[in-house]
Amino acid sequence: MFEDLKPAPADKILALIGLYRADERPNKVDLGVGVYKDNAGKTPVMRAVREAEKRLLADQDSKSYLGLAGDTAFNEAMAKLVFGANADTTRIRAAQTPGGSGALRLVAELLKHARPDATVWVSDPTWVNHIAILRAAGLQVREYPYFDAETGTVRFDAMLAALKGAPAGDVILLHGCCHNPTGANLDASQWTAVAGLLVEKNLLPFIDIAYQGFGDGLDADAEGLRIVAAKVPEMVVAASCSKNFAVYRDRVGAAMVMTANAAQADIASSQMLAGARTLYSMPPDHGAAAVRMVLQDPALRADWQAELEEMRQRMLLLRQRFAEALRRQSNSDRFDFIAGHRGMFSRLGLTESQVQRLREEHAVYMVSDSRINVAGLPENGLEELAKAVVSVLD
Ligand code: LMR
Image (cartoon, rainbow, N blue to C red; front, side):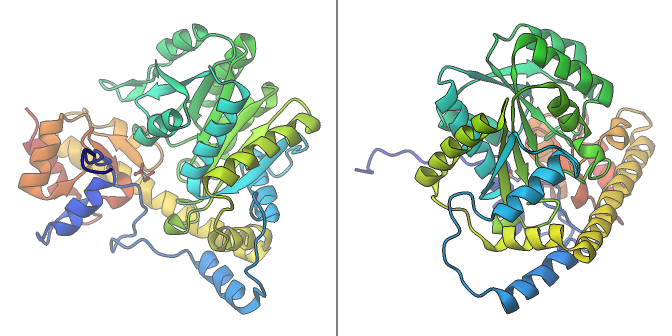
């Protein structure tokens, strides 16, 4: 049966984990996979999450099944975190999923069920797994222009023009904040324009919000999503807790659907859960239970927000200082955009062979499209790193 099977191509982000681990050079720098790291290069368990886990261990009296939607209190708390504490959630249903990728797949299954011939439009570029997940669910994928590599900014007019040409009923995938891989984001007035267009052209927004709290703050990062939610009758959302709660390996996320009324929301939710049943049946509980405790307990929540804010501030400072180091080393403003971007990533604008040289000659690891994980920047080695980057430029 398996004799003619070809090996699956390696995921260009995850492959870096193994390559980096195997590198024995002591000064190696990991700017690859999107995982927050502190100054010591560690990805800590957040304080509030650890405390919630302790309480879970002490108090949890059963590990019996919870059901297809997972922890319903987690789902309610996540809907409020994303749509806003005072949001009317009567038309919204959420389902706990294994990570943000699980949420994306569950939403994709729902879309395929609701409109089998729908096309999902994704930004050029987007997170590589977006395209793979959408196609795996049987959906068609097309790209809309998004990033201007020359200026490091959003090609907003071109984006709007492409969306204007999308047929009614198509789906538009938008990054809620902290665009992956570019770090270039829409501002509030651009979100308002996009929301207006979505309504006018009857396009369904699909918002992936995987980095809430990593850009401009928890509420600020959801502003675009909330602008859209206030205008459109229907939308779908995939949220991740991997980054903002640092529960990467525990796989915590939520798929959400907002429909025209509560009755439709119940039906859409039932379809989403039927999809879960065939994909993985029920989501893993532990991480989501810890996140739910953090969101429900005022003291834990305050501590979580404080630690998240420290992480966000650290990434902002690293952006600023790396842009300054690159300015000094390159004698140009070519990399200034890094300081203006938000979230975990920016693209340096290097060619694949320049990225390869950085890896081979300087033990600096980044995704082949020159995406860097800002949290991986070495606080005390920025000047050297900038020198290495400049040394591989043409
Ligand atoms: C990333 O983009 O690096 C992260 O979202 C991790 C992943 O699964 O690719």
